[in-house]
Image (cartoon, rainbow, N blue to C red; front, side, top):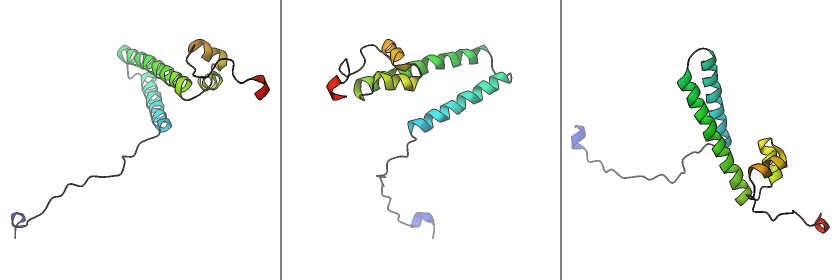
Length: 115
C-alpha cells in the first residue's frame, strides 16, 4: 500500500490560545542587553562611525518613546506629575516643565479639607 492509496481527510484547526507575549519589562530588558552587547563590541574595535550614527538614532527613538508613554500616563492613566517625574528621575518640577498641560487631573490637587 502506498501513501497515494490512503484517503486522508484534512481539517483546518484554529488555535483558540492566544500567542505568548512577553511583558514590556522583559522586552525592555532584552533591548537593554542587546545595546550593552553592541557597546562592548564597539569598545573592542568592532564598529565605526556608521554604528555610532545608528546608536545616536536609537537615542532619539528612545526619547520619543519615553515622551509618548509619559504623556499617555498623564493624560489617560491618572498618573501624577510627581509619579512620572520619579519614574524618569527628574522629579515633579522637571515633569511639569517637560510635559506642560498633559495631565488630565484638575490643577491644584486635592482640597485641603480632604487631606
